[in-house]
Length: 334
Image (tube, rainbow, N blue to C red; front, side, top):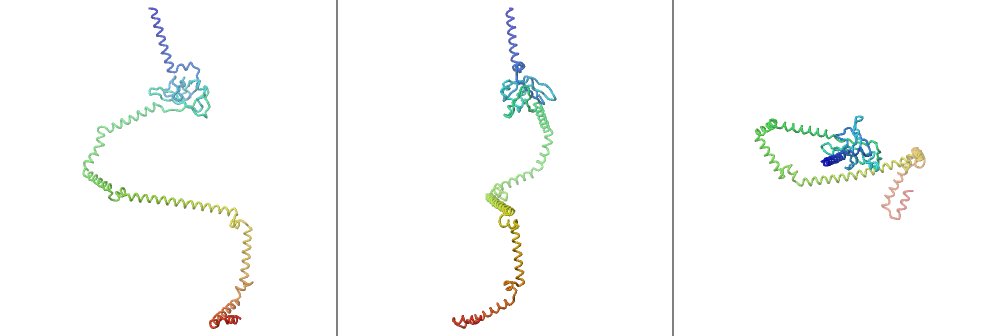
């Protein structure tokens, strides 16, 4: 009997140890006894996070939450991670920790992303960046407010309220039954005409000529736009050439540029104008051969006399023969 009692007690103790081990494993109790890789994360709201909650990277469990404390108006969450993460340098300075919801019963966890290749590995005891998630309780409260609003709205449309809303509309329909019937009939007649292609609106909708005209108009607009674009290109080319010509003139290149920029050309032109002015003055004063030709009246008299003699000579040719033409012309002239 004694051995049987001891056996039962031993079985009970073993069962209790197994249960304790299972509980510790489920809540991460063994993390307190392991030499882990600790990081600190600061949040504005722990959002029902509890010590022993899982820490995950890409959905894989890599540690547990060892402690949660209030400090400097924030919540400091200490993460106890696997040593392999520190050896491999998988948690970077630009990695971020976020409290994630794994269930509606408060089983939250901390999720860590990998960061980027530009980030340096975080060492033991350092602080990881955090990213706040929306508070599930606040979301549930908002959903509750929305549900309450919908419920109040449905109550406002129940019973007497619906009767007050629909009653005047029903009375209006009853008192204007004939007018509404005639209006609906007219609308049907109009819609039938439009469907048959009668009237202006019907032709606009059913006549393909309008479509073809509109298509041709659009094509003409496109051609006109293409012509305008070509004209603009040519105008741009002309402006470019004009700019090049102006630049060439400003640099003093070419005939016009030299004429504008070169003082020598200016001086030569000024000298030429001076000489021309002197020549014209001599002509006006009757100096030189050209001046005498222009100003001497005796030359005009001689020219008139010669023309008169030539006229007489041509008249005498009509009555003389071929042999005496030369002699007559000579006598007339001399």
